[in-house]
Length: 410
Length: 221
Image (tube, rainbow over all chains, first blue to last red; front, side):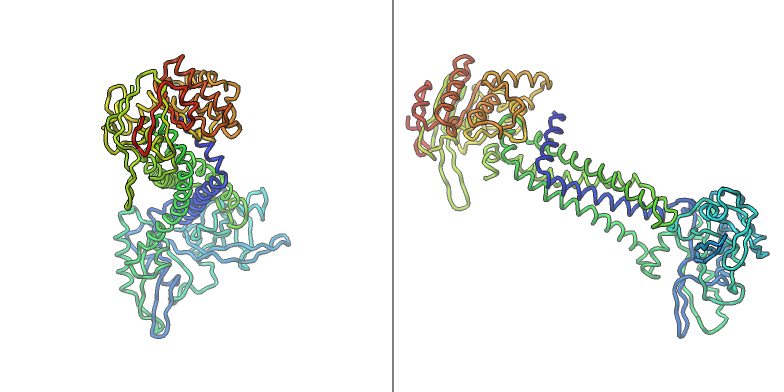
């Protein structure tokens, strides 16, 4: 019976080529968008190389400082982070880093544009970089303003080919740095870890020691366990209450030690805590919207398909099909349609992610399909497919055979 | 085989009630070949649909093999249709997406039967109507007469005791109509199948054992 249903379903789908195409396009395209988006989000916000300890990490990325005539929001000074964040007692480690800066360098007469990042020794403790050669720079390197650096594999290959890079020098930001380590490439969307060259933060040309609230630095806090988050946040708020402003430019400061999601939400919706879950709600809303599009499409197609098949239903009922049996037939048809659409969606997603991974659109991208999301998406699509197909089929199967034979007239 | 007691059928809309059948009493014995005649709109097809459990009566009682079916639910009615009744419609009612063989197999899909057994029985039914060579064709590749023969093969494949034919020759020319009538006559004589046939054709009706005449929903003969 099932084999017959499957055979009939395929025949029906092939008969209505245009409807089938629209239906499959809707399902597969939606799944592709959903899977590609979640692959991006996973890659950006989920634990991935080298940020594997995301579940224990808090970030100070977005601070608001106000004065009588001026207010600013965003990154803050090394001075502030060093005095009020680095001094936190509860965390396992605190790192201060700059955003990556693009700088032009020359090597063997060739011009290179590289992403340079100033950071400290704790950065290498918090991040899980895979060292291909050498090791991380140390606290002493940072304190002593040693001109050492860590480079990624792509930079190593550009500069030194297949030879070892350790002990060799590269020039960046008009300084010569001795390579002490080579790490695997980090994709640009891991924005807090990304770089081509990492150097001790003390090598920056900026005066990071003297008092200033303005700056472009962030802090990454590694908790001993996730359970310490409330304590760390409370301790940070306590430190904020004690901030001393040494001139009249600013007189108040707001911000928090946030998880990556809270931090993204804060960047989008500001400092109103009641909106902290807005990002999550918007994300869910968008996913539902994505799913609704093929669902509406399926409803429409199923209704058309079923109206066209009144006569068939009448024939089958005349020769012994019960309402339940007919509903079963439509369920099989919908499952097949959804599974084919899902399979096509999976293939398209693989192609799209491979294009992103192999092209230079996003440097060092390594997008991975989220099969959990794929599973949920298929389930939701199946559910909508079943509801939209089975309900009209069930209603129609309730007709007397003679009504179905006459085209559904009562 | 079939017993109808005081059958009324009324079609009601919000504004109007139309009586299709009035106080029909009918008894058809096993092995009988009965024709139902009357002018258009007199309720012939309605009567056939009620006998075939495709429609329900507004009042009255339908008995098949002595069992009243008035209180039967969807599943029980479906089973009864599947095992005891075969239908032949004027407009054939074949499924165009399915091959001739698949169309003929339809009644057997709703029985516990292997695919091989289903195929064997469908081929045997097609042989009886002289269409064994067309099993892989689709309905729209066949002539009207051939389609009706496929419909007859579908009606007899499950070896039902009763065949209900609603103007089976209505869409066919006289030669093809005669062929279809021959097949029905043979089924009745050789296999003792009970047949109730609705027809406009006096000539065909005279070939059956009994004629039931309807006029304005009432039995007049």
